[in-house]
Image (cartoon, rainbow, N blue to C red; front, top):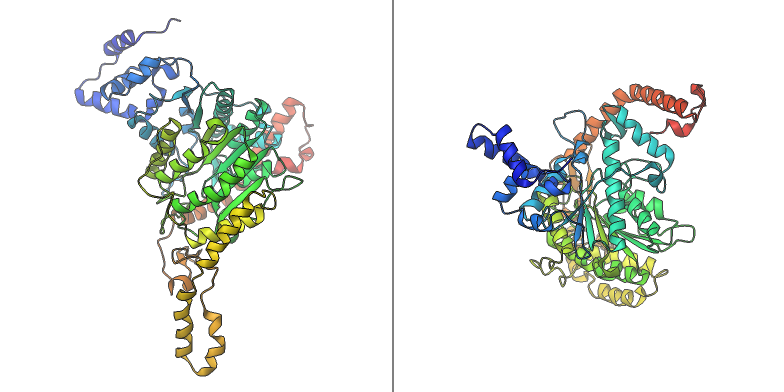
Amino acid sequence: MKKKSKDEALKNWEKKKKPSSPKRVEKSLKKKRGRLYIIVKSQGVWDPQAWMFCKDNGLTQVEEKRGGSSPSTSSTAVGFDERMLLHSEFEVKELPHVERPDRLRAIAASLATAGVFPGRCFPIHAREITKQELQMVHTSEHVDAVDITSQLHNSYFTSDTYANEYSARAARLAAGLCADLAKEIFSGRVKNGFALVRPPGHHAGIKDAMGFCLHNNAAVAALVAQAAGARKVLIVDWDVHHGNGTQEIFEKNKSVLYISLHRHEGGKFYPGTGAANEVGTNGAEGYCVNVPWSCSGVGDRDYIYAFQHVVLPIASAFSPDFVIVSAGFDAAKGDPPGCCKISFIVTPAGYSRMTQMLGDLCGGKMLVILEGGYNLRSISSSATAVIKVLLGENAENDLPIATAPPSRACLRTVLEVMKIQMKFWPSLATSYSKLLSEWEASRPEKRAEPRREAVVTQGAVDAAPDAEAVVVDEAAPSEFAFNFSYSGDGSLLDDKEACGGTIPLPRTDYVAREKMYNEVVAKSASRFEKMRKSIVLELNQVSGILSADPETLTDSDDEI
């Protein structure tokens, strides 16, 4: 069938679908604004309404000149498919799930408004990844468990990891886009790329779906890049949560270096993994590098400092052929699961600066994959800033973050990581000695003195021998480095010693959501398990994998 030209499509549309009033025209076109990513050539079909809206707003000039042609070695590719928007929580709740379709809509709208995509970026055609490709990363049982959800309206892998009938396809599309972007970038057909995908993936392990993640997109991309010829792949994960799934997948692999910067707080912050001493196993020690922040409120200056003294030195020594960024934007201001509302936070300028720093590795062959980030304003502005850097724009310089001194909590964490990792990366030794001297010189002895005197004057002379016990810990974080924990009623309380008392903060959304999910799972677990077993049995009988006897179901089949 011959494709219609722009003029023919517009003419036919005006005859058949002419709205009744100018206001209706404006309303119908504005609805298209969030869907500008499927404009005309990206899918090979003209969308007249979307084209007219873009034309009125000056967004089609670049697209028309390129005409949807093949990419070039200087172009930035973006992977997106609107079918991923169908992955959503089935049950409508008063508190919507933070991992929702609006995340992608917000980023797409921001990119369209900035004239970045569509326009300056090349769209990658989406495909569903095959089961064989997924089995490079996950067990066949895990892949089947995700696929089975397509036959159910509503299901949960964990209390916060949902699936509906469209989720399995969305996960396959996300992984497929990441795989194809990796091949396009490594082959040199495009310069770099951004995977605008969901559901996210870095919590998905070899056989488990958790933390909103179904398939591990970054792991799939890494192995596909290696299949295309990349000998060594670097994965940098700056999501505020540790990528436990990615670490599990590659912790025995010396050809993939995994570096994660995340909030940890001694294992009290989700998912609890990612301590500095988790360095890899079975001969791959040193190829897992964790930078575990000990408190909330870590910001641009701390991330840049960790990049300068840990990430880049180790990455340069590793000398990767391909770089993948697991880009969660939940360390930004106002993010609910990240709780990053105190003191310093990571800004779009910080994210763009980190992207720019990684761009100097391996000739700029870099794929950025969306992970977490749930504040729509923060995630859209941060993603747009990162993609602008991929396009060649200079990183934002609104803040002097490159030269700003780090917090004491950051310096302590960086020193801890360097002390552990220099056993495997000797080039860190010189820098470690220098930073250790800086740490010793900045010990807060003067700030501790008033506390010592106060104790002596409060009681009798007998209190003097105990005065040293209340001196501020020399290794304690700075005044911004509060430690947080939850009270029995779900209120967020800060550390009494740091603040001189308890300050209840508003109940966070995800505490209430967790309670609601647990109730839902408890009520539907038995019914869902019966349905799942029935489907598994039926599928196995058809394929001839197992006999018709239900008792032959293995323990692995009983795991969700």
